[in-house]
Length: 196
Image (cartoon, rainbow, N blue to C red; front, side):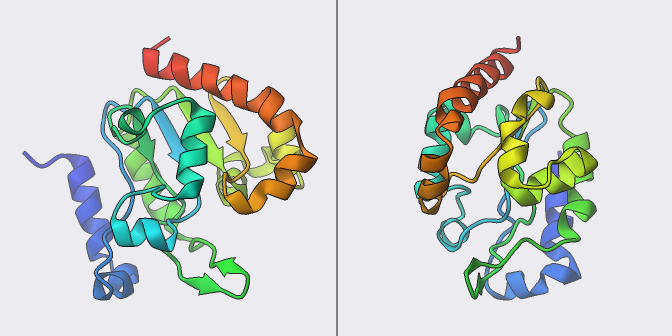
């Protein structure tokens, strides 16, 4: 029996705006199932993740799972964690890193997918694109200020900096993140997965 989530995935893959991705052999790179307790909203897959077909399949993903306090089995179980980036396709290289996710992508697909996840207890917003989209006027002027104000969004939502190894300078300048935010994050994740 075909589920609504299966139908949505097929529509995404067939959509005219994604013809370029089909031509490259790319599948939409996200993971979601009806039982998911956590929605992790990132930006867009990196090249390595897109080519492997596995979200967060890189050094950023390793660090992210450490922050969350979960192993690979938990992280990649769509009935536990829905991995729903702001764009489901690698956007390509820009002048200074990967290009941003397409602006209209989340508006077209996220609502439909998240509606199919009735058991969500926690939304994790990784990076500025997800935070601006989902927090709207509640987001602070900078990513650092938004993440620093994480308690304002609890208990249902928590903003994070991107776990890229390239953010080591940010983390060295903001030790409060590892000291305060990561332990809170782990507690929230454990509670959401346990159903408490």
